[in-house]
Image 1 (cartoon, helix red, strand yellow):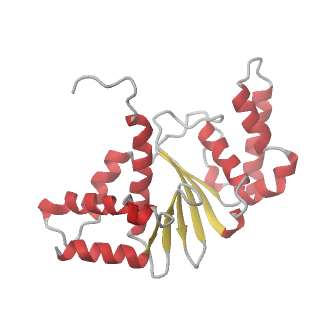
Image 2 (tube, rainbow, N blue to C red; image 1 turned 30 degrees about the vertical axis):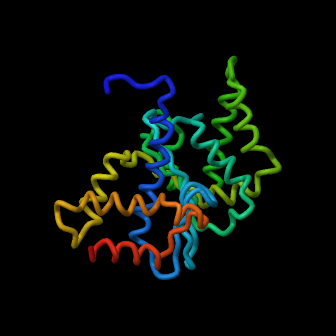
Length: 226
């Protein structure tokens, strides 16, 4: 078809599928008694006895800049999460490249106090603008509120920015190439498609959207035996 409908929701739905492909890749790394949760505690959550990991997944084309809402909304969501202490890492995984002038370059090498200073400097610079967007100002004000300082430092100590990640098409192709050992060449795409179908099936989504090591091993074994 050469045209799209006025209510075409492709650009809204694709990031959700991308999130599921991220989760699917993580399923291949599960160890016994570990689980992956989707949209239960956040976008993608890896539950492990050695320390859980919370990953927020963003599929955007524009560069990641100082005032990007993907950064500030993610921090706000984590500040509102009462269980944040159980995570050893908090990750923002995004297809975005870091902007050429962004203060978030070398972010992952900074300690929590340096990270806080970066956020505070961004806010100070923004407040000096003549024109400010209310939603952006509200986000910055909430994140940097004195009442959130202790929890924010706890978050920043664990917060990693994983930028310039593969988009959905690139990730899909890599999964076919790297996660299909033992599958006939003409069935590799079918294998990944079947696993994706399992990830989003009512069997999984209606059960807390949890994929356990045991259940994932069972479905992969079943597909390989077909």
